[in-house]
Image 1: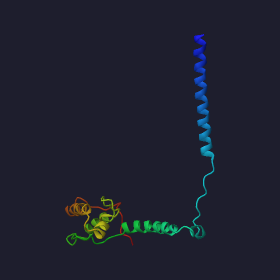
Image 2: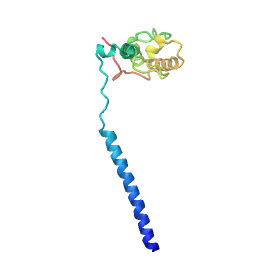
Image 3: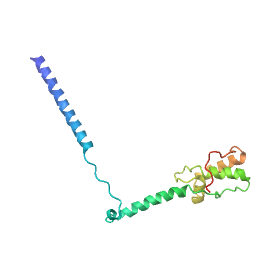
Image 4: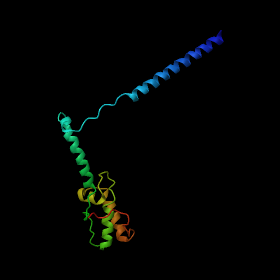
Length: 150
């Protein structure tokens, strides 16, 4: 009798686990097959009742403009005297300064960070190191580095 009781007890637990698995599977199937909510239309009529629709569109345009501003070409890096560099070395320095990003988190190139945030404590030493490297001849080519727009 005890052997029969053990077998039927195991069978009962196996049946409970199987039913629970079946319910979980059906629930997952229902969840993934349900209709998705319709996307909000971006027409003026749809946004007329939502005042912050214009704000979101404006912020999107500002983000695009911000990226362009942060990558803007800067010929003169404020706070650094480039007059002692001959034209080829000056070009190498300016190209690198306009290609490398500042690591302070501002998103500007080194040259733009110095132009728009002269108080940045991160870009000043990096620009000085770049200038010293170009001046000493450790950087002699700007091949593959961002070119001056134009």
